[in-house]
Image (cartoon, rainbow, N blue to C red):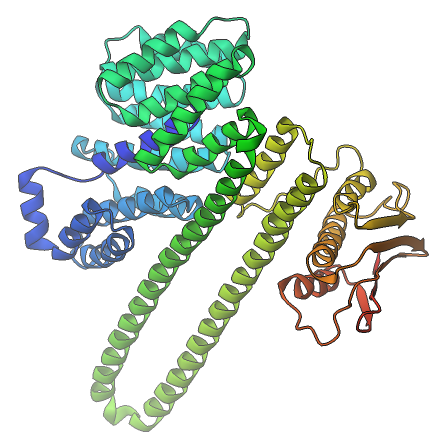
Length: 556
């Protein structure tokens, strides 16, 4: 059910943020044809074009001193951003829209409510649950009617459920159920309260309520709601009736493909991997991996596209202001010609040259920033996702009897890393100690054909070493082990750790074919970059068919 809040809110927002009255639409055509064009693209789900023209329409509204028009453009841009997974961008745009609304005008309340909804939705997906509740609660001040109120209170209760404050969530759900609601909203609340009661008390028999909600949704052909019901039923039956859980998990996955809900498909695949027979697990795992990579690529491209549009818009405004300034300066030149035209011309030239140099400098800084951001995400995808997937594949290949629950947990980690790629949190679990976690990763590459020998790695070695440094060392060694497994053909690997004075030295050797004459790819380039980031030094010693000897050291 956790995806229901995410799928319903954007639809509510999209329908609520457009002024659909005939008079309003006629006025838009007369006053701002760019807004009308943006609206058309939005209706056709062409988000890139809609975002572009909403941005253009906003500038025209600014010239017309139309505050509401500016606010609606920013709101639509914010919703498009959050629906595309750019939650930080969506937050920024919604915050920029807020000052342009007038809370005293009741006709604007529908837009204010949508803006607060979007801020709550973005905050929720960024896991800032306290702030999400603040936004959803404030939005209650701008609605009328039991159904809109029920939707917002459902969102608030869902957050309390995520925080495991089950009693508080149940109290909110119950207060909503006591009102007269539309069938679809009633079914949503009924399913949510049932699953929450079960989470609070695993012996609670939630099946009758869950199935009742499913029947209502099927009767209404509510595909999104049906998908949520299947998810709840699969969770509920996982331990009670695994065959029923598998049935509903498969129904959920099939339904998610019909409605094109990619995140639901990923979660459905995770459930199928956990519940399916061994013969089907491998196929589901491959499908999961391909879909996860595809989603990450599409969402990253969308974020970059929106950033480019906004940057181009700001640049055009700067050019326009520059042209205006130059025109004023020319008029002043004529008026003040007899008072010192020569000095004025010199000042203008110097000012122009300084402006151009500054613009060039800002542009170069922006390009460098974009390149750094691209490199950062390339490294994070390679180290955080690609190597992690390869490590799991090696474990599956070397351990044919791996428990499916363990495999599903590992996939859950990979999914969270892919979904939350923009977060800076480390995905390395050090609860059992860094030395043990490092050994687990290194020995994951061991097999019948590859013997791995590790010496000197104990918890005392890593005492007082910063967490960020340990993360970098972990990823450096993961890169080396992945390159060994994929390219070297080695059957013996030796890794030695030594702490002396204020330095730690790591010596790596494998007896593979070495890398003489091989062009360095992302993995080795990332390795050198990471060594530099911890103020370390690295040396490579390799000869064809005589193995690879790498030694790197870094300060504690």
